[in-house]
Image (cartoon, rainbow, N blue to C red; front, side):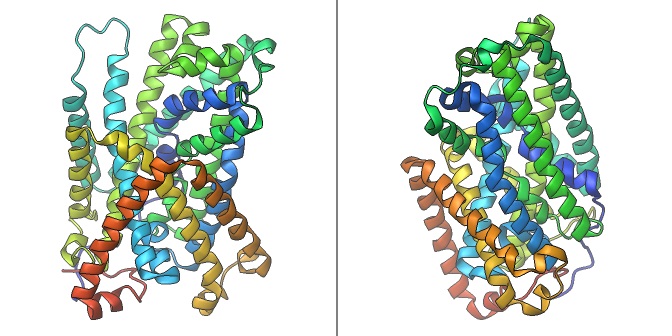
Length: 449
């Protein structure tokens, strides 16, 4: 193993990490999935969003704990699970999270073209597949040019998206109707909980800030605030926008629309409202796509650095980017776009994230005994025994939400994980001594020439 000359670069500040994290989290999901949640939660969709943030806050706390313990690239998705919990279970966490990011990369590329075609008075429709591939290539080039380029593009998209949603909310306030607010949930509390389990999709990605641990300035501070703000900004926007939306129009009308926020906007903004919300959706979709390419490459980079997929895949280009990992991520996303296999992957995403959250919580519970020297240096509440109540609650809540995903998602989840386990076992037992040694040590600042 030789030390390479090229390294990851610490260039990300709090705004950069927040924009990447919250940009992934908000993304396209809120503009589509909120309407699906409303079919179950009705006028109380905002309550489902408020409940949905609870497991996200819990896993956020566990992720901050682990980042304080040892900030590292690919940490939350792969490194912490493999070093603290179990090599095979940890590998499956990274394997699952890689797919959980590739799926949204393909989905957001297609969603952007769909929203372009949704503009009024568009004479020619852009073919979804070819347009999505073009989006994929454009943002691949942006990501290839370095994390600073990624963060600049992400900050612009993120700030525009947040400003647009705030305008939408404020403009809609005078148009709310008490009768719509009082309609409640069509399926009662069970419907609210089912809505919450679906709307978890809109929060998925929060803890991925910890996968940028080696590219953040002062990572203990930057990643911590990136996770905190990455949770608060989407939560506030989701809860308030869902409340306003189902108060402006009846929830049945909101739930029946393919573009629910555009339907609401058109009711009080007129034709301009459709164009306005479509442009805001563009920013949301592209910020999600940009961040997912960036973090997806880092997750695969984490898997590659232990040579499970071969050490050469961990190569860093002259801009400080894990280029081959980025290429692998984009190529698989392109295959999903061309083959039309995205719907199947979409059903896996939440299950993958919940599995990762459970493993993250278990890692926190095991860390004090596994790495007492690192645990003894943790600041504040994170070094107290009482903190351990939060990961325990997080495991229980995440298991319940995993159950609510339904048998089909769990079946696909099991198939993907079985494939990953076969790959891991073949590679591990082929080079057991070398890979076992690499997976037993912290990999920060370890590269291959």
